[in-house]
Length: 157
Image (cartoon, rainbow, N blue to C red):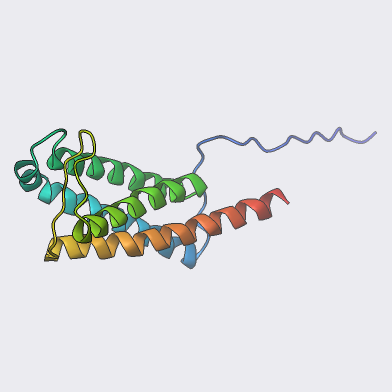
């Protein structure tokens, strides 16, 4: 008589850390996390001045502080899980910040509801560093998202 063999399907938890998948994965995740941290630090440093410069409605400083909190939270998700959802969230945060900084540099966007008009037709060091980090980070997040999707499709096939 042979011993009974039982098989169980692997459980799929919604939040489960994804194992490191080699140098490209680590490089993409680190690039995205660094970009998000740079974005958060620059926005926190500039928040006070933007609150004074654009006090109407919500205020520029409040928008900057919210951006910082969201960027740091997403950085933790990318660092810990690094899956499609994390890279997708990073792409949304970084791309929206990049588009906003470039848009408000070149286009005098009027006040939109409670959001102030933050048109500022100059580049300065912190703004430039933030824009470069956001652009590079958005590209890395897109590549990470595509790689995570390809990996998920390969696992399910």
